[in-house]
Length: 552
Picture (cartoon, one colour):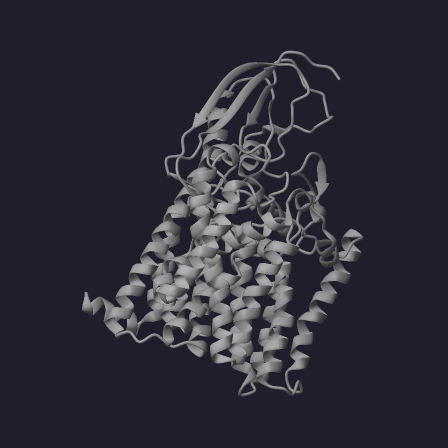
C-alpha cells in the first residue's frame, strides 16, 4: 500500500489521467440524453455546411423552429462532435470516448493551476474529478465540460503569462477565452474575471490589457457573422433570451435551490467538512443549514408555482428536506471557503477564486433560465483548489492527511459514480423503450407518433417514428400514439384514442438525477430542488394507444 502511495505522489498527472478514464469508461455506451440530440443534429449539419451550423429547423418544442432559436449555446462543442463523428462514427461509444478528452483537460488543468495556488495540487484535481456535478456532466455530449476545459486552459496560460510577462502565453490565453465563450456563452465572464485578477496582481494595465481585447474582437466578429446568417446576432440573442420558467419560481426558493445545487454538485465541500472547519464552525453551519431545511419542510420558503404538480412536494418532503440539509451545508461551506481564503491570504489568487465562485453562483441562480447542475459546473475546480488551500494551513502529518483526504474523496467519488450510474440507467431506458416500440410495430403499416423530446426523440426518429405537433393533424385511423410519462413537450393529445398497452421500465439504481416525482432536477430544477436524490426511483412509464377517430 505504501508503494502505491509513493507511485501516486511521484506520478500525479498519470494518476489523474488513469483515474478520469476509470471513472468515465464504464459509461461510454450511455444513451444520448437530455440535450445531446441538439448537439448531434448541429454536428451533422456542420459536416454538410461547415460555415452555417444552425441553418436548419428541428421539432424540439411544439412546432418546427430554426435551430438558432432552439440552441442558446454557441456551436464549438458541435464542431468538436462533428470532428469525432467524421473520424469514428456516430455511435454512443465513439462520441462518449471523444468527450472524455475534455474531462481529462479539466482535471489536468485544475492540477496545473493548483500547482501555482496550493501545495496540494493532486488533492485539488481529485476533489474536482470525484464530484457528482463533474462526472455526470462529463458523461454527456453537451457543451459544458468542453467549455470548462477551455476555461481552465485559459486561466492557466493567463496566470503563467502574466508574471513574468510572456506575451505568447497571454495571446494563447486570449484565443482560449474566445474559444471558451464560443463553446458556452458563460465563458465571456472570463474576461472581467481575469481583468480584476490582473489589476489586483499588477496595478499597471500596460502590457496585458490588449490581450483581453482579443476575445472581445473575436466575439464581435462572431456576432456580426451570425447576424448576417440568421438576421440576429446569436450572442445578443442569448443575452436577451427570456424564459417563462423564471416567472414561475419564487426568488427565495430559487436562491435556496441554487445553494443546494452548488453543495450537491461540488460534494467534496460536504465530505471534507470535518477537515476544513472547527467543531464550532461546523455547528454554526449545521444550524444555518438546519434552519433552511426546516423552513423548506414547513413550506415557509416560497418556491413559486413551478412545483405545484410534483408528488415529492407532498409525499417526500421529509426525505427531500433531510437531503437538502446536507446539500445546503455544502453550499454554505463553499461560500465560507471562498470568503475565509480571501480574509486569510488577501492576495490576488484569493480574489480570483472568490469572484470565480460568486460569479458562477450569480449566473446559475439569477441569470440562467433555470437552476441546474450544468450551470454550477464551472465552480467545481475553484472549490477543489479552495479545499486544497484550506488544508495547506492544517497541521497534519503527511500520512494522516492523505488517509483522511482519501476517505473524503472516496465518499464523494462513490456518490458521484452512483449518480452517473443512475443517470446512465435513466438515459438507457429511453433507448430501450424506443427499441421495444420499434420491435412491437415491425411490419405494422400504421404510423408511429410520439410525444416527448430528449434522447427518446432521437431514438424514436431513428426508426421512422414521427413527433406529434399540437394543432397539426393528418393522422390516420390506427396510428400508434406513444406518450412517455416523464419527458418534456408533453401535452394532451387532442384526438380520441383507445388504450393499447402501458410499458414500465424499472430503474434499480436507487438514485435519481431527473424525476419530478422523486424531486431530482439535475438538468432542470423545475423537476426537483436537488441535483440528485437518494431513494427509490419511479418506473419510466410509456403509454401506447391507437387512434380511433380522426378529424379536426
